[in-house]
Every structure is written in C-alpha cells, then in structure tokens.
Length: 213
Length: 208
Image 1 (cartoon, helix red, strand yellow):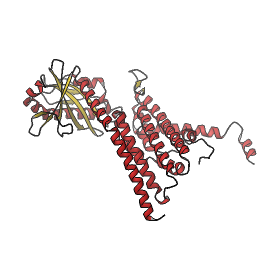
Image 2 (cartoon, one colour; image 1 turned 45 degrees about the vertical axis):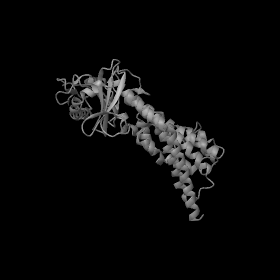
Image 3 (cartoon, rainbow over the protein chains, first blue to last red; image 1 turned 30 degrees about the vertical axis):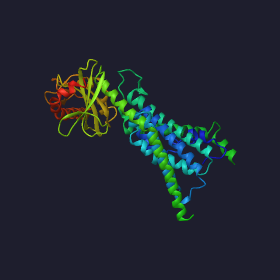
Image 4 (tube, rainbow over the protein chains, first blue to last red; image 1 turned 180 degrees about the vertical axis):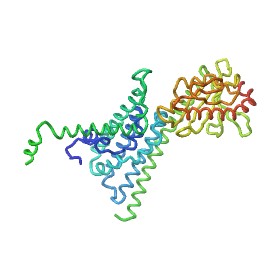
C-alpha cells in the first residue's frame, strides 16, 4: 500500500480516500449523509477517533502481543469513541441526537481497524497521526460530497439555508436510503472515471505498450 | 509470549482505557447537564412566548401536584410559565406516541383557562425525512396548534378537510405521522386535564 516516502496526510485525503478509493465505512456513509451538517459532524467525529486511536496504537505498537492485537485495537477504538461521545454531547446535544446510534458505531467502522492494522501498527507515532488525520478528513470529504448532493436535491438547501426559494419541489427520494445508494454510485463513477483518465494520459495505447517493452 | 504476560498486558490496557473514559465523563458531566437544561428551557420559552418565570411541578402517584425538588425524580413533569406580574401563561407537558418510524416525543403547551392547546414542538423523532418529519417544521401543520380545542377528542383529519376547532389538518403525504400527533395529544390531555383541574390553585398561585 503506502510507500514510506509518501505523504500519509495526502494519501488518506485523496489518493487512498476511504470513501471513494478504499470504499470503507459504507454504513455511516449511506446512513448519515442526508444533510451536510450531519455529514460534517459524523466525518469530524470519526476523524477525532481515528487520530486518537492511530496515535495510541502506534505508541504501543512494539509492546502489543500479536495474538491479542485486534482485541487491543478494539479496546482503544472503543475508548476513543466513548470519549468522543461525551465531548460531542458537551458541545451540542442537537448534533448528538442527529448522529444517533452512528456515533457509537464508529467503534466498528472498518476504517478504524483498517488504519490500525495497515498503518499505525507499522509506522511511527507522527506518521500514524498524520495518517489518521488524512483518512479522517478524506472520510469527511466523502461524506460531505454525498451530503451536499443529497441535501441540495432532496431538500433544496445547503447547511439548512434554502437555495431555491419556497416554490422548489424537493426530490425527496434523495433523502431516503435509495438516494444514498444512487448518490454514492454517481460519485464512485466520477472518481473511477477521473482515475482512469489520469492513469491513461494523452499518449495513445501504442505508445504505452512501447514504453513498457 | 506466555499467557500470564498476555493477561497482564490486557489488564493494563483495560485499566488505561477505563481511566481515560472516567476522566472524560467527569470533565464533561456538568457541561452536558447545562446543555440539556438550556434545550429544555429554550423549547419551553418558545412554546410560551413572554414567559418570564418557569416553575416545574411533578405529578405524585396520588394524583397531586408538587413543586419539583429532586431533578432526577420519576414521573410526569409539568412546566408552568408565568409572565412578569406572575400571571399563568400556560403549561407545558411532555408526550410521546409511536409514529411511522419510531417513538415521536414532543412538548406541547396548554392553556387551562380556555382549555386549548397553544403550542407544539417535536423533541425527538425518526420519521421519514422529507415526508413524516414535516410534523416538526411545516408551518401550516404547526398552525393547527395555535388554538386547538380540547373539549372534544382531538382528531387528525385528511389535509384540507379541517372544519372544527378540535381537528388537526394533517399533512398530505404524512398522514400516519399527523395521526400519531393527534393520538399523542388526545391521550396526554385525557390523562392530564383532570389532574390540572384538581390542582388549578397550586398552579395558578405559582410561588407568589
């Protein structure tokens, strides 16, 4: 996966974006993105948990007996989630209610375990923190892109601000679960198309074959 | 690595995690309680505009009302709002009912003088976004609760067919949720109105 000379922050944010490239954590991606506010809150909460768990796991990576490493990662992720739970409640009960059960479910969000096992267990604390931050922000970016499309089409607003005036007939489908799948598919398509274009630049296929041989 | 070592290691990890969680709880406890109180206070102030002073009562098992002294006390709570001169503006109750998604819980304001409901706000719901959740913000629907008669059983009727002051004009596309609101209010009023009648004096006196 990531080369040592890569920048773990940018990797997580863009090149290995958790939503569009690793396709991890799809449950919260589909469930809480019916408004930009929920998407941002969920993304930032996950970022916080990811940075905490990556940092802690990297700190103890040489002491963890490998037989029980997964149990350890889960205990640490659960601690970070519980702390986040209290912090979010202290900041705003409204956001806490909007996130509902998904906040507690961050603990089983596969991004957390994936980054712990694939990165934090093998890299220095500094790089692991950057990786956590990058992946967290990448996840936030993914959720926000989905949330924007769904809120604009489904409710005619952005961050709660009405965009099209009172005569706009909202496309309610986009707030419902099918809208989540449709929006996700559309974004995945755009990202896949973009990636393909980048890997096959201007020169023709014949040029590439020549270069390879 | 031997089993004993692994067990000792897991114990240590659990201990550290436990300390972190308890620390976070202790640090945020007060803020969380304040937030919850602000939310309650705000929604009551919104339901009873002009309320200068609020008092909380609790319904005792005997059916009597008593001023709330212990915040954690169990039982139906009743919030009374008074204006500057100490005149009773209205009472606010909590009510809940099964909606289309899950339980809908709401606060509503009641004027014991005219026996009408004078405000309604949803506290928590999981109704379908864009359809059922309109019961929380649709201005036409909320206008039903500016003066809703409770002398007859409250009933949610099909959109556009409201004729009587005790009927709720349902939202088209959110009939199930609108009906749930009607049932919620009817059940709650039937239960609480006799208690209010019996304790009118205590409520109107406030703490004058």
